[in-house]
Image (cartoon, rainbow, N blue to C red; front, side, top):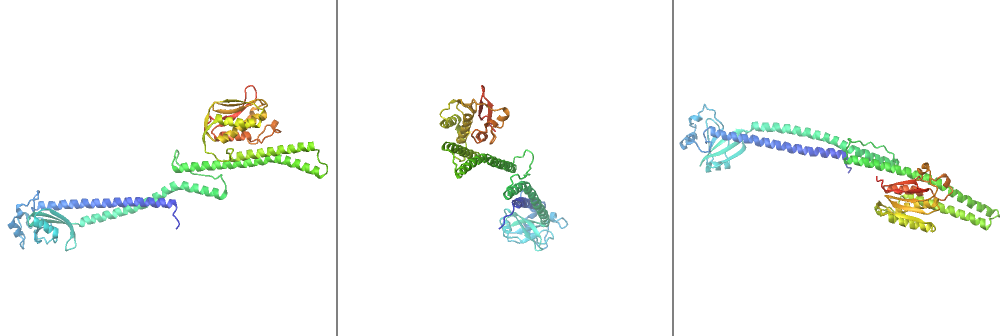
Length: 470
């Protein structure tokens, strides 16, 4: 069974909730009005008995209904006291004896037939009882039966036609109001659903468009009130940021592939040229002398090593992870200890080189393996362009390697951390051009920034500044 859309479900739920509230309010209003009207009728019924002399305001029998007078009133025709004369306005009042017989006042016909409860009140001479009933003529009436004395009770009767008509009119009005309220609630629910679900539907359409076309530059128009920070606004902002980052990641990936293809072409071409040259010489029967052949083989081996280094750097650049190739959850990192391990690795590569260490304890949150690789790249860069000792410093939220090489101009220093960039004078030196790019990437991942500055006394200081938090 196909589910209804969220918009329809919100509209339906809103209509149902409001409908229930309106129905409950209408039932309460109708019930309260009925109770109020019946209370007023009961009060008027009691007033009739007091006014006509059946009982006084204290509920006691008055002299108008003496035993002899009662007997005379119950004769046929009844003999009335002056206050119940025929020309006086006679309310619907009758007397009930303990045996259930009734005595009428004036020229009234018998109003209602007493039931068991009313006969019990008349027989005991205590209490009162109220009920709704129907006369022999089919009229709905309200009957108040109140004890006068043992064996006698007075009944006051009033028609409920006006009350029933009022309640019917009220029920019609409340029903109409409920219907209009339900329709209004359904309309308001549709507007609410459109306001709430509309942005989500646009987000869904954008996600489906990306899934179908693989186009990350999808326009996303999810605007809310200025300053709004509700869940939909946050979701749309997060989705927009995610798509922006994915698009940027794809562009960087494509650029990396293009740059890698360009950089790989040179060593691969050189390898192919040297190997083909050796093969042609062998095929021509004029092989190279052993010493010259060894030099060519060493050149080929150097190119293979350069190619292997380039592939390794590309792998790390593409993954953006540590040396183990796995994503590592950020944790506390002691920078000075990481630098010591990096120096040990660099020392093994060039045992003759001296490293001067100036390490202050400093802790950050990040990936120790990635940070160690970045420091190793800083040291490799310094070793490549300097013959003297290398100073390694951790101080003032900075880690850097200082060399005594020729350095770079300001324009060149601004390009030093770009992928595959190398100065014109360094084209013949080994390297992939990715070492400092990896340093920049690691610095960005740890909330810092790379720097390249001139060293006092000559040379350069290249490193990472961790104080630039995002």
